[in-house]
Length: 187
Image (cartoon, rainbow, N blue to C red; front, side):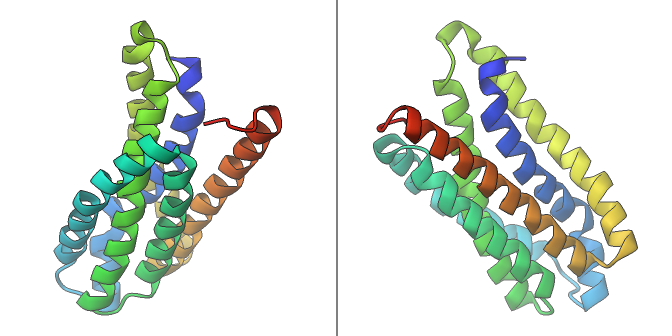
């Protein structure tokens, strides 16, 4: 574990929990609303991830992480909320495009930020910390959001999971505020 990787890894954990809910329950959600082929979600999601990553990388390098991580969170929230209301393949794909845009911006940017925070000799430990948060989040999402879905519905579970990204935004905004107070040009 690398302590300097904890903050970006915490943010990744929030996003990964939502991903765990999608990966684990989207087929059951689709059945519950009459969508027979939820595979279209993954196609649209992957297409957006592929389109957004190069743009996010340039923005991250030129402007800093806030230019990518804040909009990415909003796109993820919109994607989760739209997913919760999806009843047709078209609405499922639109939700996937928003979620994919958010994930495609956030995941590689948090990973790059993690690596940038540590000296060269600690990059392996930083990678391990970051990737462990991704794995842990997917597992927690499957378990915890399954409990939420069982108590409510799959649609409600996706709505509730969007609150994880709201928490991400609040925590990240507090971090930025603290950094800006300390150093006006903090990246």
